[in-house]
Image 1 (cartoon, rainbow, N blue to C red):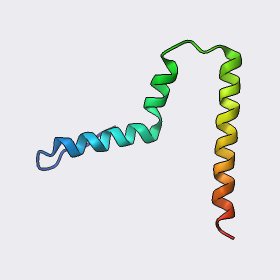
Image 2 (image 1 turned 90 degrees about the vertical axis):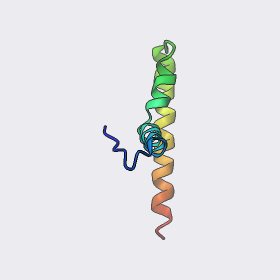
Image 3 (image 1 turned 30 degrees about the vertical axis):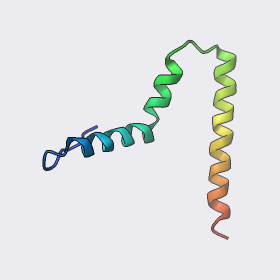
Image 4 (image 1 turned 120 degrees about the vertical axis):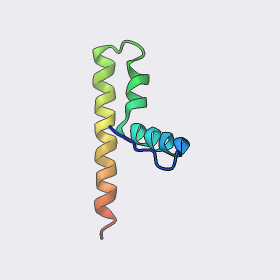
Length: 65
């Protein structure tokens, strides 16, 4: 990943970097990996995330009507 700094505006570049990292889920991933996660807990979490993505996708398709 590359963020370019224009006109010595480092603050703006760091904000862009943080936003890109957050959108990619890096902070959530680091927080999750901080402690060991049992396989059963991991499976439940992945199911919940999948259901959330599915609901989000369904909301987007229903807005078209």
